[in-house]
Amino acid sequence: MKIFNTMTGKKEDFSPIAKGKAAMYACGVTVYDYCHIGHARSAVVFDVIRRYFKYRGFDVKYVRNFTDIDDKIIKRANEEGITWDAVAKKYIDEYYADMDRLGVARADVEPKATEHIKEMIDVIKALIEKGYAYEVAEGENKSVYFSVDKFPEYGKLSKKEQKELLAGARVDVDERKKSPVDFALWKASKEGEPWWDSPWGKGRPGWHIECTAMAIKHLGESIDIHGGGADLIFPHHENEIAQSEAYTGKPFAKYWVHNGFITIDKEKMSKSLGNFFTIREILDRYDAEVIRLFILSSHYRSPIEFSNEQLHDAESSLERYYSTMARIDDFLSHAPETTKRIQTAEIEAVLEKFKDRFEEAMDDDFNTALAIGHIFELVREVNKFLDSKPSGEAAKALIKRAKDIFETIGGVLNLFNRTPDEWNIDLLKSKKIPLTESEIEDKIEERRIARQNKDWAMADSIRKDLEDKGIILEDKKDRTSWKVKIISIAVLALSVSL
Image 1 (spheres, rainbow, N blue to C red):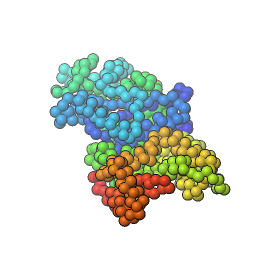
Image 2 (cartoon, helix red, strand yellow):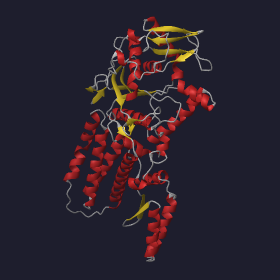
Image 3 (cartoon, rainbow, N blue to C red):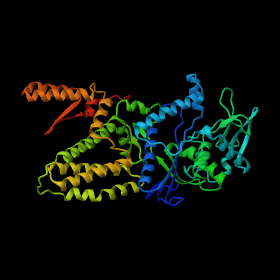
Image 4 (cartoon, rainbow, N blue to C red):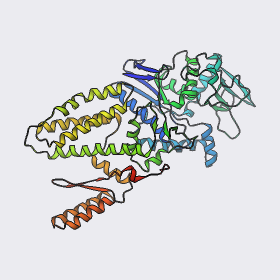
């Protein structure tokens, strides 16, 4: 099992600190606004990494934090006329609502920064005592800064030279700092801001110190995997390494894992650029599983170009999968018992190799794109086999085996968890089709009666009326089923603003 380590710039064999265990920490969100699709990518990526570790038999402990005190939270509180903690609670609740829909499971521990003030103060005190941090008076209170010059390895994760260290950093303009690149561990209280008592008077923690304190408390001084979006490499993770290793004298994390950006017109999606879409905006137009498949259809380190075309491709892939599952269910329920000579070599070969091929893909730095490719190769083989109109118990056994594989692998990726009927019922909502399941069934019954009475004009009229509303009917031996029509992206012609 290999993981790309940002620290070394290469894939390495995964060898955990404690045999059979995997200790993971992923940086969570600052809760001052609705999450965008970039946040969704990071959450889904680390959710799947955790699921795959568990599938491979590791005892996983996964920590993902909330930054619930920050300049942006204070600013939003002032804008909305509510308290800072009300802002934090509001957007934590919204985060969970989005993640639940995207199939992102809760982490084992989800600490909040404000619940770990004591631990942060303890770390800061120790850094001052060790000579890595210094105090700066600000009226009656003091701020505390980490002295970057005291940590010679600063820059080892981002590979930045000293002259580059200012680029992209959250640096407070403060002439009292010993160096412009020194970063805040503790911020002296300003008028009207929330504060906590500390050895330096009233104040609040800096951004970076929270992750050091929470990771050490919940996972230990050295952890297996620390991750997050690539935008966190510098300065956030670089600063975490400096303060953590200065504090403990030990390596902070063995493997640094970072997911790539989501881009629009080749430019990184971000709130600062104003070119982002919230998860809730996208969920207003697409089923949540479409978004999850869209994210996992690219390797987690690669950039993803966000577009309606890409989402539509994911939607079409899911439609192909669920249509195949409907065929599987029909075959297992209604396949004829008579036997005939059938060619099984191709599907047997795919079934035989599938588990190894899936694990080989995932063992190679969690290559979900390749793994999903293998899944849809199996989808093709199943359809090809069903097209040959097989019969008998041997054929049923092969199809049942394929269905079991789909269910097992779907559990690892948290995809393909619905029945075909559930998929189509949910599509009624996401596509905003003005029909309920019962209304569609009533129309199908009306059409059945029309056909029984040989009123072909009425039967055709009902079919066309449903199709015009986005519902396709499929006549089978003993019944008529329905599914939602996936409209061509050219027909959709959605605006960039969704």
